[in-house]
Length: 115
Image (tube, rainbow, N blue to C red):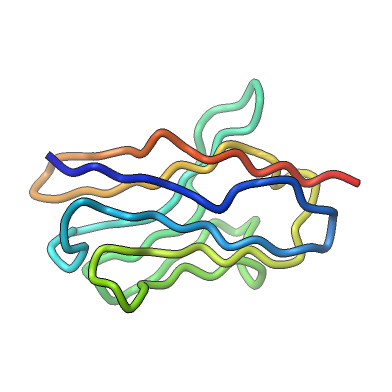
């Protein structure tokens, strides 16, 4: 069983930045995929960014050039650096991982972009 705990959400003005963190209960090097999804009010949960195979990164078109996913120096941490935030980025952000065919989700952290 893998536990994922997100942190770093909050209220930020349009154009601002936030960095989300996801702490896993296991070494993420063993994960096939680790990344982020988000769910805006009344919307479906959508893909944001992920690291696959420990190496390759991919992003949703809506965040390319603004968000960066990265692994931390600690073996169990992944970050999502979010720059140039827009009101439409407002959502609950969930950390996601898949290992040996099993999916894991965190409980989410709320990001609100508003003036």
